[in-house]
Length: 257
Length: 284
Image (cartoon, rainbow over the protein chains, first blue to last red):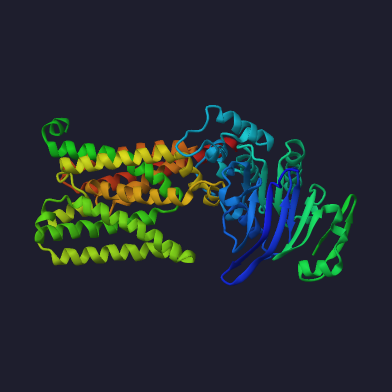
């Protein structure tokens, strides 16, 4: 059996003597569409940052594609889409094409120029997120939802095997959230891209995901979404810190505030 | 004017150095502006003042320094200042901007002490503060040319990484780019450009040549590459116009170059406003 694409082994992380993550173990297998759910301050974004190597855990280790993350050389296999509002420079004078081409920087390597056919790669990435018509537009002129699609294209252009998304729908209006998740589901289904997603959109995302991890400093549940209803009330309360409603959907169940 | 340039070596030096600075200052300035580091450039220019003033002071008392071009100590101070800024920024993670007033005031403080300790270089100092058409030596020109080569090689080697880092530094780190090292090299190169540019533009105005042409270009450019090209064009136009005006009217070139770039900026802002209102009118 192949090694998990991401294998988190007994990770803990403390920030200024406050425990953010405690003894977390989690595996992401090829083809998974995993949603990491939890209340505010539960350590969801911290866990993603640990996965990406942006912060070092105080304890435990991470294997990426079967290799210790410290020795992992193929960062281009992992695409990352951050929370839009926290990250990019919104007034930046660049076209959509230039921004997406930035996603090829690591793949091309230091001291090397982008490959000759990089424009074709950019075009294909934009096509897969439905933004091919915006190639020459300034990225600062786009709406929040359009910008987020561009950032997914930037993450896809290097043809990653895993895509990690941190609250990607923040700042996107409710109508566009549905089509946004449909697009993610099709990337998972049609291009076999493994997805790890931190989100608050529990209602919207449940129909599309395959796996759920319930996090609140530690993992309270991890498994197929269909098994989520097997969590006891006590487990739910430990996870969310207070009682939560259980809502049943066709093909699965999920819980939220 | 052409006759004068062909006749006098000092004018050849000034124009050649000016043309080089007109390219490298706005070129690096684009990255400085989009990364919101404009004030760091200002702080480094004041640290350069301390190095220059220190060198001029030491040249009066230590024989070896009398032979040394003050630019070298200026460059050393600027590079040292850039490293200190980075140390302070990591020390005060939640108040990164604190590094700027600390280093800026340290630069002015040391500069003021050296200036008051030494006597009789007020003419030299005026040239360093506001630039000079007559003070650029062949050695200064060689130093500026050397710095330009370093800058161009750095930008060519790291262009795509600098672009990604400037647009979204968290993404740059997450995608495995050596963001920390590239930023460190970027700060050193910025320090070099500031020290090199101040012979023409002057310490007090050097950061403006890195920012004002970029501010003008950003109003009209449609892409990042266009922003770079337009910034260089505006920078060169300001330098050439400023140097010619300074020569004919016996003015400090730093002032004429910066005032020209300000006029250019106002023209571009006006042009942009008119074109936007015309478009709106056409739509209505």
